[in-house]
Structure formats: C-alpha cells, structure tokens
Length: 356
Ligand code: 5AD
Ligand code: FES
Image 1: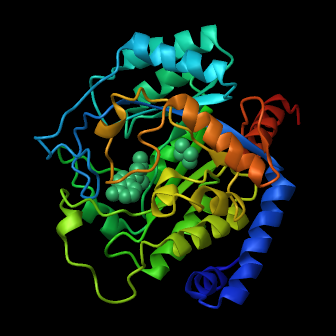
Image 2: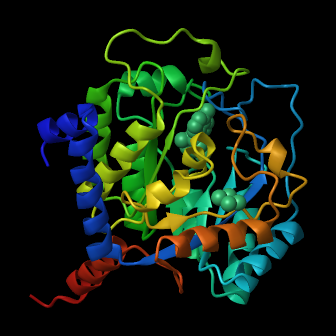
C-alpha cells in the first residue's frame, strides 16, 4: 500500500467500497494472527502524572481531581486475578510519575515474573533508557508508548515539553526494540488539527517502526483539558469518529499484518453495544479487560464516560468472553506474543550465531 492508496481508503465514503477494506483486513488478520483473541488484563496502577498533555484528563494541570497510587500488594493481587482468569498477560499502566522508580518497577516485574506465567507489558510513559533497560532485565516483555501523531508540529502542540526536554517517541521505540522489548505504539484518530494526510503518514510510521502492537482509538474530547476547549481546525480536519477509527484499524492490519491490535475501550466508548465486536472483525485480535480495582476506576479518567468503568474485573472478563465467542472466535491461550516479534527474534538470534 502506498501513501496514495492509504489516503484513498481514509477518504472513501462509499459503504459498499468500504466492505472490501473490512473484508481484506479481516482476511489478513485471520491469515496472520488467526482466530484467537488474546485477553490482556489492564491494571491502571496510578493516575498521578507530571505531564500536561493537552487532551488527557490526567494531566498535571488538573489540581482538583482525586489522585491515587496502588500499593505493590494491590498490584500483585490484580496479577493473581489475571492468572485466575487465565489471561496471558497484564498491562501495567500509569501516568508519567517518578514515584514509580526504577527499583519499584524492577521489583514488581521481578515478582510477577517469578510467581506467574504472565507476560508483563509496561505503559509508564517516556522513561530513561536506564530504566527501560533495567525493567527489561527484570523480565518485562513489552512496552506500550503511543506516538499519538506522526505530525511533529501537532505532537509538539499537544505535548508541552517537560523541563525543556525534547521527546522523540519513534526513536525511543526503536531503542526499546533493540533492548528486546516487544514494542507497541499507536495514535488517536480525530485530534483537533489532525489531517487525513497525517493519518496516512501515521499508518506508514506503523510499518516503518515495525510495530508488534498497535493501539488506536478515537480522540474523545475532555472538557477540562486545554484541547477540550480549543476551537476545531478548519480544513481537512479528521473526524474523531468510530467509522474513521475502523478504517485506521483495518489499514494498520494491512500495513503490519503480524501485529497484535486491540479493539480499544475508546472505541467501545463510542459504541458500547458493538464497538468491540466491529473492531475485532475489521482487523483487531486483542481485547484488554480492566483489572483495576473498582474504587480506582473512576479516577483513571483519561477521557469522560469511559466504557466499562463500573464492571468488576470478573464481569469484564465474562463480557469479553461472550463478545469474542459471539463472533465465532476463541479466547486465546498463552502469552500471545506477536508473530512479528517472534520472527524478528528468530532472525536476530539466527544472525547472532551465524558463522559466515
Ligand atoms: N481521548 C482518547 N484517547 C485518549 N488518550 C489520552 N487521552 C485521550 C482522549 N482524550 C489515549 C492516548 C494515550 C492512551 C493511554 O490514551 O492515546 O496514549
Ligand atoms: Fe467492557 Fe464488556 S466490553 S465490560
């Protein structure tokens, strides 16, 4: 797929024509990652954040919201629940918060890896190479860091730099891949100021970065954030719609056939009845049921009216299973590493032992 073709799909409005895109994405999904839908237990360990991302409800500028951090024992109890529910992995996510030190996370990861068969994914924001390497050494398998948009100017506009530091997420992702992480990234669809051209470049960046995991969701305006009150841009603005998100999902699948791609909560937020399912039949092969203890859920309010915040972890699990089986798919077993990562590693270890 070249840039032009990606753009053509992004702008395609004919529902008949789009059926072809959905069918192609579903076929490529089936051929490359199969019928299994893997469950990742999401543990939102804290909502403190030092950043001021203009779109995010957790941004440091919001002084008036309740904040929390889970204790190590609480986090370990969630991991135990993941094992009980037969999830293959947990995603440990938080705002960017120095409270989560190199030592704390390394210990936590070490304990989870020593006492469970879970794959551990970290999603703790932009962290130093030293921290990332230590966490990898402690056993962390995967890291998620969305680049949010490939448009540098737009990125800078919505991510005020921290202490003057220039962030370069694509470069960070490259370094994480070198450290041996399975790497995940992604974007929001419909960010004010984002164009169709930008989205086409985003898809190309997924392929350039050789992503193992791709997370995509619609931008959902939060009224108490700087971006939530900004006037929408005029020309070529992408809508933050369910429909355009499916197109991006399908295109992500075509660009990175062997990646693991979740059908996200943001999508379910726009369409609670059908969003998860439609994502799963238009390219996705992962869902992320929430394991965060109920008393903390409402505080992890990245955007308003987030889907599934009232359900208990157990309800979330049953609901996801039912949705997966209603599509004639099966709940995945094992850690569910992306075939893209497995192939990259086989190649690297092959290269390393090559005598020629
Ligand atoms: N709408 C949709 N997604 C959001 N995220 C953050 N804020 C919003 C919002 N207002 C997404 C970002 C981030 C992920 C954890 O949540 O893409 O990387
Ligand atoms: Fe979230 Fe069902 S989709 S609990």
